[in-house]
Image (cartoon, rainbow, N blue to C red; front, side):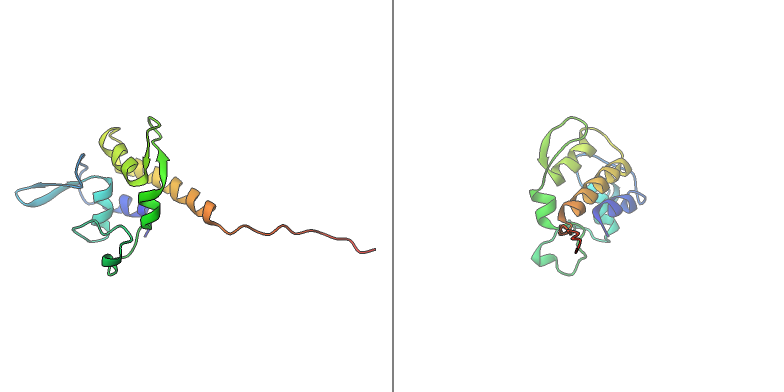
Length: 129
C-alpha cells in the first residue's frame, strides 16, 4: 500500500485532527491527522509507516530515505522541508483535508517513480546499403 492510499483509507475511519498523530478522549482514539490516518490504515497504534529495521513485521508504505530525506516545497506557501514535515504542515497549518493531502502525496509518489525509472538506452537506426 502506498502512503497516499493509506492516508485515503485511514481518513475514512475517523475525523481529522491537527498538531498530533491522534486525538484521544477518555483513552479512546477519536481523530487522526494525515500521517495518523496512514498509521490507522496499516492497523497499527504506532508510527510503523517508515522503513526501519525493528519494524520488519509491518508492511512498508514509504522508504525511510524518501519520506525523511527528500526535500519538497509546500504547494501552498513554498516552505521547503522534508517530505513528512510538509505532509504534517499541510494538515496542521493549511488545514487541508486528508484526501487533498493524499492527492498531493500521490503526485509526489508518481514523480518519484518516474525519477527512479530506468533510463531506456537510445536506439540508433542504421540503414545498410
